[in-house]
Length: 370
Image 1 (tube, rainbow, N blue to C red):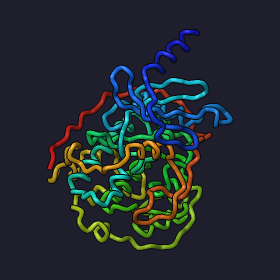
Image 2: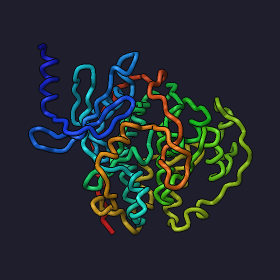
Image 3: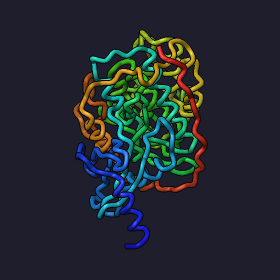
């Protein structure tokens, strides 16, 4: 046994698989524990043999970016080891997700609760963006929640770096209901604004308790967006008619957000509107969002430990993390918040590797509970 095999075997012995709790097309997830401490962990076993060209790119991405991102609002990758022909990711164990919280009608959300979830989402995303990483699949079931209430960004299988602004990227990313209009129109050069649009859709979903923009196809997704926010003009969004997949889809009037979000504060609606601006260049950044008056006005964000959580089987979230983009029935209240399309996990034009230095972790302390 050479040094590499020996080191791998030593890492493998640190972790114990206790129970299989989920299986997707390309991975099996186990609940486990650390042998020395008994700490709960999750082991995500990637089925390497499933791929003709070796290891799936999503597994490489997940390992690459999670090894670089250490932040309280990003899921922690504890270890990686190989076993036979499989790659095993050891992740911190997180027992629920934001989608389950939203769909549990026994839970009552206070404005301070929504503010806390949004603050933690923006903190995690700001850290990713500050370190030149796009998530590219933000949605409620990729926002996991720890036992102490901390929300963490997870599933980095579609993430990539964006250090080179002239590099062509795929537009086939981000689950449809959370995908911004520029990607639906085939834009291949984009940046952090695509993640911000997704966060805006999640923000709206937290207030509505149902997906905000549930399109049934890519074209219907655009129509759904335009019906909600009005058809963009060249003044609103210069150059959008020149995008590769642009097609005119009719004229829809702009409906004020206040008509739908009747209970929201003025600051809340202002931030939501800044996330859902058509022109990506004018969309708010995660850093700017964290300094928005919404987060500094009463009521202050709830403390994470005080946030509502569903009582459920702990296995569900892990299954969701594996399944990622599963087919579900059509949209509507109480329906799974995933559109009926699968994203391609292997992205041929997205494989540039770049060196990034990881900036030190910011401490956005909680401002108090209500």
